[in-house]
Image: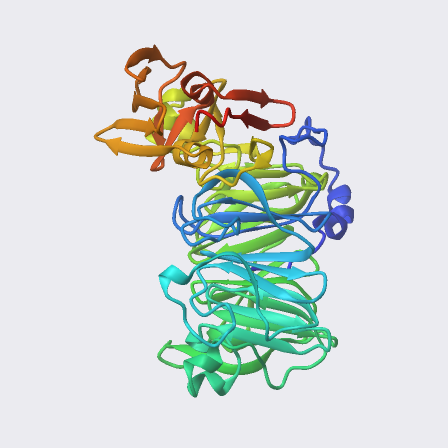
Length: 501
């Protein structure tokens, strides 16, 4: 939700002046390869829960958007609803990305704005959408053009035009849109319109329950649910139109539980209190961001801390070399962008870990993961998803192929049905058939049969997060297809005999 500056440039002088000596860099240098997500210039991560609404985007230097995580509403943008535990490319010609819960947004090089996922009015067409109308691929918000920046809040969006005006749309709770039209009809709330009274704006910000913009003169204007304004009985007050918040330069601004926090250029973090008085919380802040119920802070020393209450500041657990950090997004799993363009997640294994690991009983058992290994926060590089080609054509699957203990697994329906076969389930038994062949196998066992003849699989079929995954070799052994696994390029190639299916 924040507008992230170049962290290294801003704090280089401060870091060098402290003469901090770091051990061997936490991030090992990696060559550009098909395995690791690299050449990235921006990341964005949503959600504060292990599963629900948790997905991440990354934008590479060529303008390609990569996505991974949950996909209940099509928020990954790859044309289907199915989670991905590694990154897949979904969009191109993009210069800025942002996320909110089950939505994704992109600003293209031509100044147009696009979205995908659970529209629910955020598609900017002046209407709410039913669940079945989720957008699984990017659609253009046609009311906008000449946009130079976007910022996404919890359920509202800000767009900055090249002429310095600010446009908003989405949910209007607490006055986050900054304009009165929402009172006339919900259609006007869900249609991008200009915020009156703002001009010559250079930066915009969207928080959980507020919005803000900074103009050329360095004045920051804010609107929405601002608990920094209190009456004598301590009731929360909403400001429906922009009000002057600060007249000094700020670096970042965000909110948590209707409290506004801001960092100044000197690296101090402040809470905005009653009558706009500022209370300093800490100094030596490199960057920070908040989700609904907590804020994460990266110190110039490279130590991360967190708080839900400013009187109870705790260690986050992450310690890094700040000179190697370009951007960080604190969330259920923290996402880090390194200066060399690689991306890492930090936290327990979750939907956005990004290296094919999955918090699932079958996966944990066959990958030999203990609960401690799953729940203990670790730093992990984000991978590119394995590519699968069937008879020369790249296939979009319901979930990405994964490797468990050296065995490649692919989603059963995604592969078999695209090969022309049929799949049936019966109390843990799986039947794969067509006119010529009948194959039977059982979940979590290596027992199988082909046309009544018993056979043994190398590894058992598994059910991982509701998706039946079969060992890749089964495609070859059971169906007579030619299968090749190119580990270096992370590519599976399947060639079928069309007389089989």
